[in-house]
Length: 129
Image 1 (cartoon, rainbow, N blue to C red):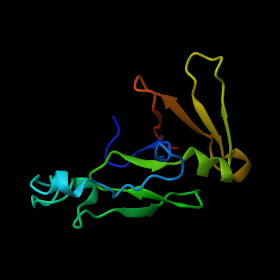
Image 2 (cartoon, rainbow, N blue to C red):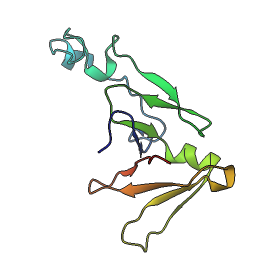
Image 3 (cartoon, helix red, strand yellow):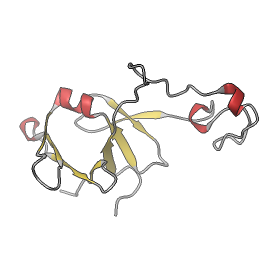
Image 4 (cartoon, rainbow, N blue to C red):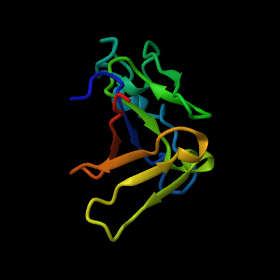
């Protein structure tokens, strides 16, 4: 059973309907004027835009970019678009499990197998070597 930050998951980058990158801190200020934030319990903003919310980035061994990290989360989030810039990534869509394999063997590290979950997310569970 994975514990805090033992897994990693792929997620697609947010996009707005007109194309381009989405703004993760955008929200309707009028709608949130009298609503309470679940992070700081103050009114006027949603949790994702809370000024007290601490979003850290952490170094993941063998990965050239920092990843979003939160000690309360069970995952580190990786972008498939960024991972494939550093490593060869394959996925056999004809195979029933449709796992992603990040080929790190050429770089002196074991390959990472991201297993598909019922939700459609791909998750990697590190094992003790």
